[in-house]
Every structure is written in C-alpha cells, then in structure tokens.
Length: 198
Image 1 (cartoon, rainbow, N blue to C red):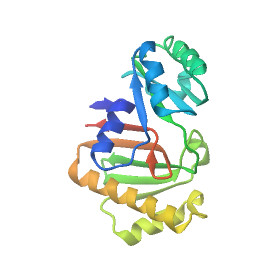
Image 2 (cartoon, one colour):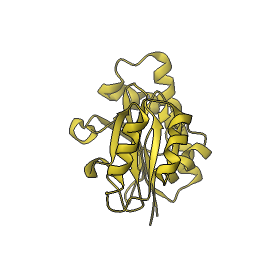
Image 3 (tube, rainbow, N blue to C red):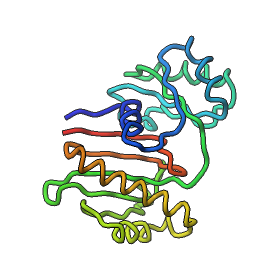
C-alpha cells in the first residue's frame, strides 16, 4: 500500500487532465517570498508530510492568508508540526465545496462517491454512491440525489458530471487505486486530494 501526499496526488491528477488549483510547494522560508508573489493573495497554506494524514486535526491548514508577514508566521507554526516536510500554498477561491471519491470494496469493486465537501463532510452525511462502471444517466441521477447539488446551475452541473466521468476513466486506467478523495472540489478545481494505491 502506498499513500500519496497532497502534492503527489494533485500532480498525478493534473497529469490525468483534472483541473487543479494554482499552487506551489515550498520547503524553506527563503522560497516563501517568491511563491507568495507568484500566486498573489489571498492564499491557503497547508502543512505537507508523508506521515501527516489529517492536516486539519494538527492545525495544518490556514485559510485567508492576506500578506507575506502572515504567510511567514504560518510557515513558522507549521515547522513545529511533527512530520512536516514542506508547505503547500494555493490560491484561495470561493464556491460550493464537493467531495468526489473512489473506494475499492471487496464485495463490489470500485465505488464512486459524490457529496458535500469541506471540513463538515462527515457531519453532513450528504453523499451518493454508485458502483463502477457508470453510464451518463446514472451519473446524472447521482448528482440529483445529493442535497448540496440541488441549486446548481446547468454549467456547474456539467462540471460535476465531467469530473465523475474523469473518475471513471481513472478507475479503468488505474485499477490499483484503493482510495481517492478529492475534498474539496470547488468550481471544478481540485483543491485537496489524497490517493491510496494497493
């Protein structure tokens, strides 16, 4: 079993034609100024390390970073987190947050999940599941089943549909994927991701 870090997972998804939020990765404070200038503010900063699975639980996610001084302060705090290897820095965007994922089950093979994303995913339990492979009409039903997608515009609905189709292609191409979590997906952009290979 191999677990990819957020950086590795996002780089992989980008190569597989997913839209990933504009981002950068820094390991030293000396690289921070260049990266923040390149991306512009506001930013989201996240701790990165092979052994850090739940970034939120260790205080490793800070949103609304509006200037370099604050970025420098956050980097200093992250350095104290056990297992920290670097920091992911991303453009901060607004929009409805979705969860999109894969879980391989012993009984049914790969299951695909769509639901409300963000830090309250587990609490909301607004998720729809389907077993791979999926036809387009099943994908549409899947989207219609979740509360968080009820008021989507036609354009946003299509974006979600396209991303589920990409997930299906991923399963076909890489059956060794045991788990994949994109959470959140905002405006069609992957903002955070985790992949487990068997």
